[in-house]
Length: 283
Image (cartoon, rainbow, N blue to C red; front, top):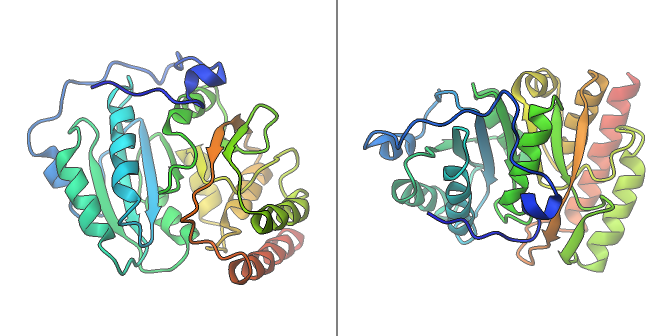
């Protein structure tokens, strides 16, 4: 199976495949039936070197491409991995689509489908990461706005001891292949200005691509109180407060016009949640 390189991959970022103690040659293709078993809803999953969570709310149209591309990339890596789709109360065929893909992709990368009845991306991420036993865990959005190849740089940073490796659209070396609408750019700038004091030195808390040392993120997750748009800020703040090193990764990022974020309604709620995080810090 051949991976099609895109801009923003490990070569474009100038980061080679990590060579630390994590890496080891993975076992040969899993036994027949592994993908079928892993496609069921489970509560306990075997450990892997890396576990990728993809929160999904009504993602029937976008999820198949993202899931196939993710499995194709991971199947070529020298570390073991698995993918977890977290259905966040979808009313469409998201679960059916995820299960269908899980049965047809490379069995070396198991795909699990779990449910999360509590609304909000933060709740879905917590559900996946807190139930994982893998060494490195993380998530990215179902639209794959950040290329999956960015995982090469993330794994290198984590293997080098970082507590978190996050994609950053505002890194000096990042490129925006397709920009967001003006209303979202203005709102994002205001949000960054308010959140800057919570996580000093971090330019972009909201890009939907974040990976962690599981032990470090577990300690932060159990303390998190927000589940919506401001979840990322609180999670990074708690990691930072615990002394964790956060590495920002440059990306070639593409805005998805099908984004479900509503600038007015969701924006007001997001700023309210951010104020709550600031109050938590002061308490």
